[in-house]
Image 1 (cartoon, rainbow, N blue to C red):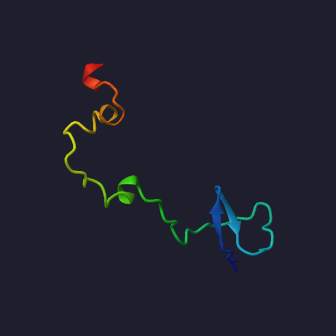
Image 2 (cartoon, rainbow, N blue to C red):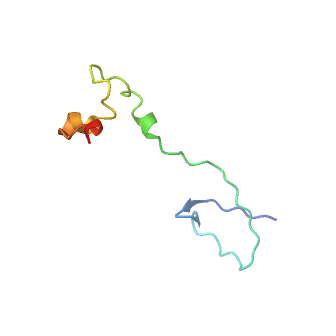
Image 3 (cartoon, rainbow, N blue to C red):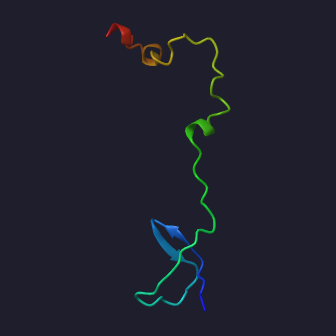
Length: 78
């Protein structure tokens, strides 16, 4: 009869819940993914509400942001 143990993966190692009996060396096991962990949101997902809402910016703001923010020479002038 198959025995079932619950647990989770931590730092790449399966850690069992509770205190299951030790498995004998060489025992054949099967690991079944029960629940896929939630993936972290991407930057675009986290900032979706504010992406593209800025108005009145220069057309080359993305390329020349250091010039506009810090006063560095324009990239085209380097």
